[in-house]
Image (cartoon, rainbow, N blue to C red; front, side, top):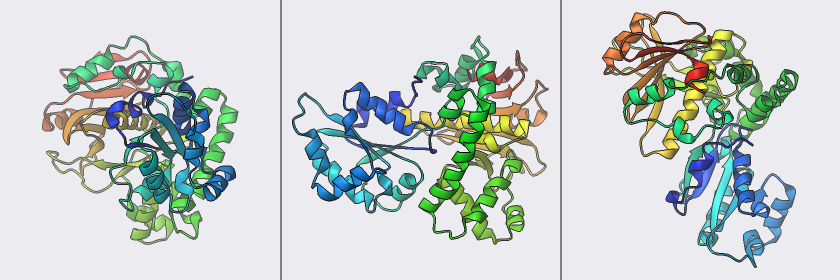
Length: 406
């Protein structure tokens, strides 16, 4: 069984009485984390899937389902309870508020879900002060390898963080190839079977487009959003022109922007903004989009860049959940089309830059210029090619991605 790094964070006592909301893409492992915690403590019966008719019926007929199930339990300390998919219930926040206020002295709550959980919790403050939100992404290579969480956590100095990962001696190329061909989602990745994975992904995108989008939007004709979704793979790695998308879809600017927001809210894609402070002639508006599930991306270079983007995002989300610092993921691009694929910031200040390449090539001059403009931060060129590890001046490196991320 693969241990997820978030499991070592989300259940820490330092988060006190607050409910632990775990949000993320469909089928990335949220429920598994919760169920594993309940099994660990012998409380499997305290898992409530609100998609099940049995649970909904109990809620309608019993004044307090937890009161019944907790009766007679002995032992000191609180017990963990999981409410899965409760955001699909009408007035779900009122249900949670009532149950939490009644049982917070003896229960720790885990609340799992995807799109609507994240959207609806922003719509009001009835749960204010009662929960912390945590993010789960698809798998990282280091999780599959069973590394310790400290292996990927940031260091105070970015150069120390880069040095730590450069010191990896193994190149897990085979595992990275599986990630690239099967995706980072647990079920298709761990199946190791491309035929089964292809069928899983077909079903996955149907679920996202038909169920998740319908759950969070009032769009009558979802075909327009689905058309947009299938237009994006050819645009991975490039700044998105909403004007171009608008023309292709034959809708107005506000509509295509709205559609992109829905695809983001349902975890179909995530978007990166350009970072422009201290970068001359930088573009400031156009975002880049990447898939959580990059199976739709056929182009080899674009899929590799998407894979790197997801690995970095997963780390940053974990860092934000586990530390007091705030990390962000951006890209750099000037009006003359000089681009650095990724910039990680720490507390709004540049931390480290990354570029994704298929093969070992010379580090381009504009990356050095960007590093200098941002305070001489480290730059790492991550390549798909095997057996690459070299320094190219102070703070500039070219390394096989399988080594750096493994």
